[in-house]
Image (cartoon, rainbow, N blue to C red; front, top):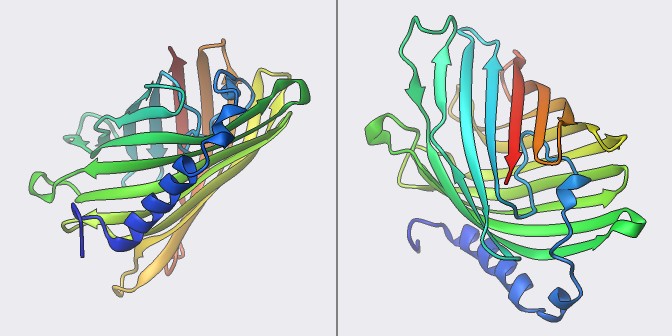
Length: 264
């Protein structure tokens, strides 16, 4: 049985995460939701942040496939309360190099609702632990040339042992209708702050949503070393080099990523 197109496994994940949050209200009482963890844990380019904030992002990806492409993707994050947040991924824009010779194309739109389960912060000890869940829906109808609609429940986390930190996300993508491939995904990183201004980290991603040329399900993923610069308390600039591989394909897909964040 499907409810609003969401598969049974995906709903079980949502119910489990919600139960973790609502089943232990005592755990919330000792948490400091005012602690601004992203002053110490630098967001990875390809990982959804587990903290709730009011901010805007602009992502840029320049691939070196043939043909090489440029993708621009804006995103807005909103903090509704200590435990509730909102994410809005505006339509991305894709264009081939050299720019201007071919018409560009618009990508999908996505929106998500976040709920914070855990937010423990001890600045005097340089430690913090965050756990957040999100239900995100993507709108990209095939009738308009898109890849299809989907719903993705996911869990996100971050752990700080200053100057070291790690963060990640894991979840399941469930198609709504046709076009999107169902499957799991996992993304994590390990990073280190440098003098409180710079940060370096290595991000690793994997999923089983790749359909091989013979029609069988395969695994794909990437690694992306990256460096970030906190230009001010509100501005963050990051750049990374991504190497992606797909099962059954010998070619490595290289691309350069950039991220600009403005916190409000």
